[in-house]
Length: 271
Image 1 (tube, rainbow, N blue to C red):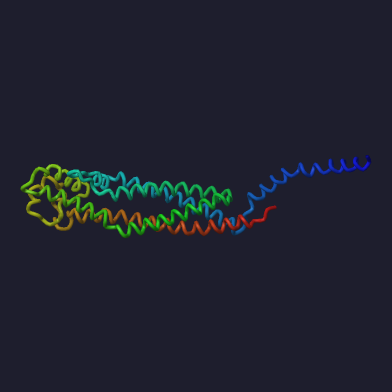
Image 2 (image 1 turned 135 degrees about the vertical axis):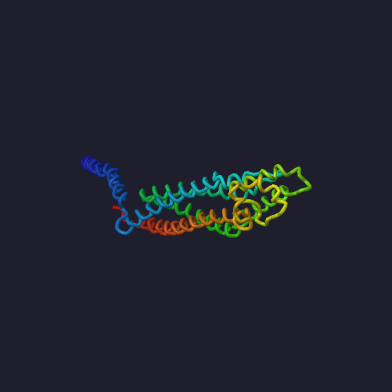
């Protein structure tokens, strides 16, 4: 009986150490929250800063996409219809893709900021995976844009020429009103007039379709709608290309910093 009493007493004495375990886990969590120190902590805040820039870049891309979608020059031209044919939709598809990319970038940038501050390997791993996918999509989109850089302007020029031929046709005048409206939108939006070839037939309808300003310009160079269409899309593609290059560089640094920070969090001492 005496031995059992001692044994029970020892068991009772051992209970307090068990009750202290939850407190010890809380103590460990507090230390793990500040586990990254030194250079790793510097990388943590650099990653947060780059993610903030990435989030802002996503907002800029979203804004550029909305601007291209609702810009008077592009939206007026690409909403045109002539004889049942819609103006080329390649540009509209590209704009919607751009808007989607901007929205996704803002979400991924927020995910990276939160993951860096919380020092969460799960969030940082998810962020890294999203970055790799976005980077691959950006490279693919860049290659597609480079290969088809002249497609949009060429399709739109062909659409303009189809309306131009109907507008100056002296025999078949049934399509002239619709064709004249299409040309008028081009001329008012781009401040141009005709193809720049001084077609004698076009001069018969020139005054009713062109603005006074374009009628006073050099008909071969300054007021050519072919030239204006190419300039319009070339300028906008340069803006998009420059933004994509800057974002690609940021993404590369983010992927490097994310891997380094994940390794630092994994190897940080738990105390």
